[in-house]
Image (cartoon, one colour):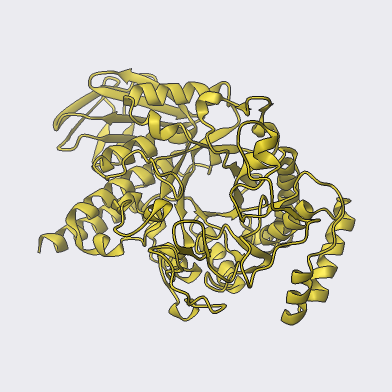
Length: 541
């Protein structure tokens, strides 16, 4: 009975939040609340596509396809799962057709369930779904104000297997293996053994790999693909080098479906000019989509790119240092970079974390941003691996300046240690939907993420605004971005709380606490609110 009552309260709070949203603010990438999911591990919406290409060989624990697909994500969009979390952007792992066989990297047989082992960039992998599914997903997400960010891999193909031959040497190198001790030994090499490296530094024209020619002919699309490629190279003037083929193929998803951005994989393992060209190609495709679909345009934001430069952190500002060369990736096509500092910085006090990030983003990174995360698919040392600080993790992630990246299951304390799994497979377990439906503690955590996430989504000032502490004990602060202003209190004592809002909210203004749902009025430049909760999220009604 308690569980039923709690679920009813969740529905009631969600409804209240929807009814009493404050004044609608313009979407701002710098303050986005992004949900990152492994397509194969989130939700199986169509079990008829679970096995393709004879992928029936037994895989090691959590190293095979588990059935998650685009249809499952669509179901959760329809159910308002993301909207209730205040998510306004979804990043999905790569969807393109993967190598057909399994390979063993030393942790047992592994299939390309994660999407980072491309075989053919022009197709979606049928395990994930169809292009019709992708079109429906993007359109339904956009209807709810949610942007779609796909994952781009240009650095490498998938591993070589008996049924997945290597691309020709005009396209890839298979040695040497990277040593990561200088610029060349990070860019002109293979990441690991048996992961062919695209010759992204080359501008030399290359013929299409014969394996693609034969494959497309068998699929009946060779002439159409060649016509489209020729039009691209004529229009852009780019040489027919491998990197530009792949850029074109990835940009086609922008032009056809109107996706809003790309998270870009293994950025530091290519020459940096690759990404400036890629952003340009994607922006052109985004513009074409908008011209062809004027009724579906969400806003006038530029095409969004966020880069994975493994080891980059906000403390490095705009520069990544290879030791023998320094590179500014923000000047090479990126709006944002993934912030590997955040999981360590989250051990600092709220004020030290918030004020430092605000200062950096308003000065050295002004006009740019970082994407903060606490857990991810390939970081074996997350902030809260044992899920013992889940509420604190959510508070710090969702209230920090910069983009917040919620990794699937952060909001439900999905386990990051799985019996029988090795290495990063532990980070990639199936979404714990059963806990959400039946575990009271999981439901409480989910509500915490929903309240904070919605407040963040309603107020770009939270992620993109200027931070200013009001008082240290009790801890209150404000964030402002243009006309968007909020006041937030953390670690407060239950009962009556009072805070000065001088210079932020005027006397007589009606405010709402996004955490308790209570309404208050500004009197004598102060707000008094009585709640049994330790968090207050004040917004103008």
